[in-house]
Image (cartoon, rainbow, N blue to C red):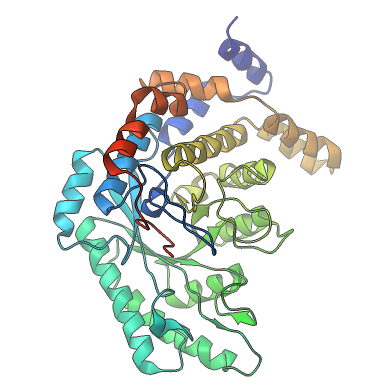
Length: 401
């Protein structure tokens, strides 16, 4: 009996419909970020890596290769101005020719000198105008590229008590984003990210999910919260946040990464795979309430091979999702209704400890993909080819030094 057949037999005892699980896995979409393919760094150094993408066209080519190897990454997020071009229609067509599309358009109001004391919350109306105009530019780029989302993250905040008025900054924030929101077409969403610290150390204006949620509520139904899995204090129960936002209809999407201490931007699922599984458990349990959630990767591959790191990220997300799909939900509900604390925990633990690799391999085989995406990358010679053609360049991606 093969590993796959053996696993199917074990799952049947949990009343798991294996065909339904495979269908869900085949329908999964994970958006990769353009900046993850270029030379990106930590707060201290950006190390050049052979073959790292130097242009947005090279980033799209790499993203298309990841999609060909995994079958679940049909879009690539862009970051403006890092990925700005003069002809958006040509870029859109280039992506389409390679079998992918342009995903979320990410704004950048955290690197220019003008934003030293904030962007949309800045005391100076001229600075706020510059930031708003940049957002409106990104909305226009999204329209031209066929994107249905703009993704917002801010470094706005203060370093010292008394530096600025909390309430006045809040008003500036709402007023600025209201103008941007009004420019959104009905088909486009505004995904609002948050971060509890850094680079502002006394307070950050979008400090947690509650702030992002309240702003999204004020703006309207096209505004939702984006959860970055690295943007929380130690011990934060991210799966509870996810469940709450799902219940309120305000979970817009994820920026998947992992952290050990702070916003480390490590490969998702590498430091706390059980947490990632529990997040997906909430998403699966929510059913249709999670059908429009955007699953995006946001990582800084500082010391890792870019292509291999992205593939590892996707594989880890697939694995967490597969484990969530094989939870015996009937048994879990029964244990919960009976207040069987440890029994309920064991239902989840059984699913988490299930080796789902045979299912993923079967799904890839049925999609005519290599069962091992990372092995297929190395066998294809693509990583060696781009290393030879591109060499090692300075910068060329997100978070440039």
